[in-house]
Length: 96
Image (cartoon, rainbow, N blue to C red; front, side, top):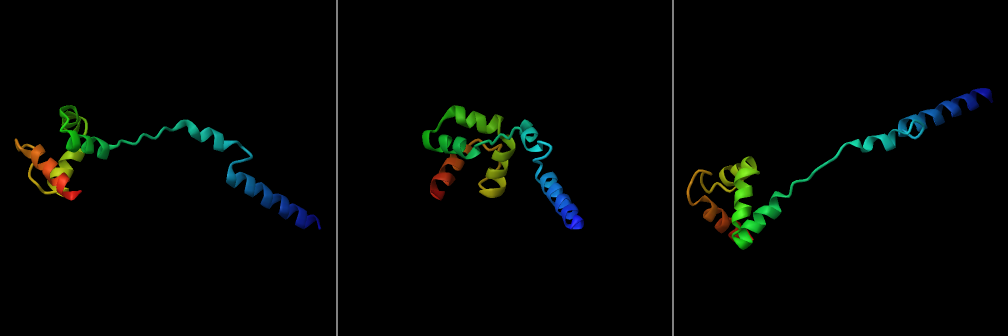
């Protein structure tokens, strides 16, 4: 009987330790922040309204994702082309 109580106590202790309820670790893990960048909304704004500020953000703030989209995914040319953003608009519109 004492063996069962000891094993039950150990199992309950392990349960609380694994869940983090006995030490309060659940409340302490809220220190990290996660930020999500919505590249698709910015691209959509540029394509829909031909927004110059959206185009600037694409080229300045999101340089690498824009380069990957234009050169690797869509394969419509290089980022350094003069008319690349017009081709980007046309290719996005045809995908819709």
